[in-house]
Length: 241
Image (cartoon, rainbow, N blue to C red; front, side, top):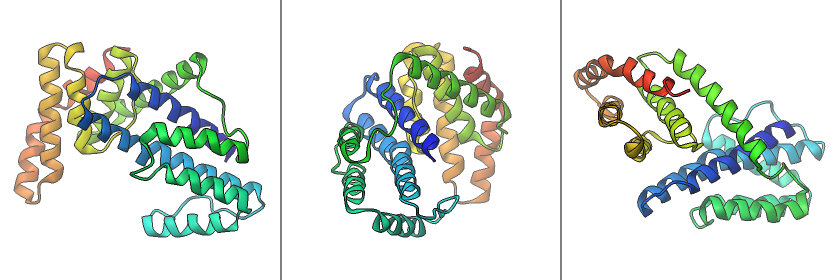
């Protein structure tokens, strides 16, 4: 469990650094910051909670419940089982995940403060660790992209965009909700040929249409429009390594 906390902690720091390096308008910046808090930061908090419970001698299930309500209930039970100081530290950190928590910067500030009670959870990001995270993410994303089928357009697009940001700008980002994929594509415009950027933007639009369509005929039409572009988008993501 501690290995999971260490890995997630280093990743969150690297993702936060990558996000901070982008020139974003306020709307895109807030949306991507929220995605980082709701995704990797929340996963880190959950891993820290489980690790503390294990250290306190409590039994922890191998995996968290998939249902959000059940997961919240299980986490509340683990919190209640901890000693008061550890419980208070993790509750304060959980507030950093809220809408008023100050985003990823607020979460990280609360995290360093919590270490006064919980002890050091993982090392600070340095150039060596940042390079290691970049290399591991690149390898994992390339492998996933090569294996992604044409029936997974959102996954395929996400992986290509993440690889392009990493390989063209040295920016390590993180998987985002579908609605934010056009934002990741737009940020690549200065770094890509016009045709390549147009392909990514068109693919993002069609992917949203396909996944948002309610009628089977509309779903089929969007899927047929995506099919000829799948390999081009895949190769854009794989071409820069």
